[in-house]
Amino acid sequence: MYWRDLLNVQNVEKGFFDSSNSYGIPDIRRDEFEIKNLIPYRVDSNRRGTAHFFLDDYRFERCWKNPDSQIEELKKYDGVLSPDFSMYTNYPKAFQIWQVYRNRWCTCYWQSLGIKVIPTVSWSDESSYDFAFLGIPKNSVVAIGTVGVLNDENAKRLFMLGFKEMIKRLDPKEILIYGNKLTELDGYKNIRWFEPYMNKFNKR
Image 1 (cartoon, rainbow, N blue to C red):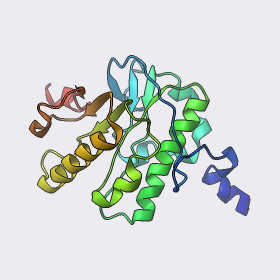
Image 2 (cartoon, helix red, strand yellow):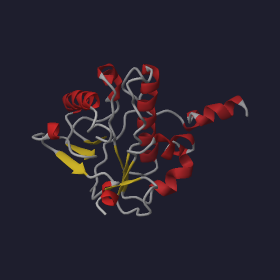
Image 3 (cartoon, rainbow, N blue to C red):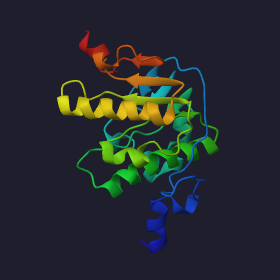
Image 4 (cartoon, helix red, strand yellow):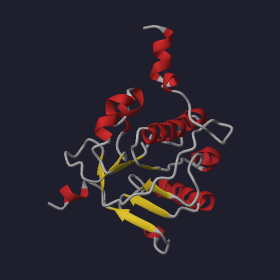
């Protein structure tokens, strides 16, 4: 393998996108389209809906490592959410910034190829706020997930702190939430819940 091949793995050869922040995290375009349902990317054979990436990272890492291989698959959906690369509190800050960068880069790349994308927003703790919300237009539709939050009080606390910060910084037009409902979000406006995919199996 040559050194240029290593650069290709990081998608350097595909170029960089415009950014209005000091981190170089790309600014994405506002997309709006009808979202009927959320279905896990390439997990369900049904492609009639909007694909989400609230999955283990290994299931969609190919979207970054070999992005062109996934374009035709992505185009089968009505639209997609941006990839939800994990943001854990024990990750070094540099790695968390990298995860946000990859999320926005994929969004911009997909949009440049005609794919409609709603940004997925994630954060870790208060130290991530300076970069976690960058690149997303204010007053747009955003998506977040509550998977793994419900039964962990500390995770729930961090989620709610970040949720309030997201509202303050982005003032979302609508918030799509994938996961089991949190009573802490009762009373918030412009929220639309989507039941976890696995729930349909648990009901059988």
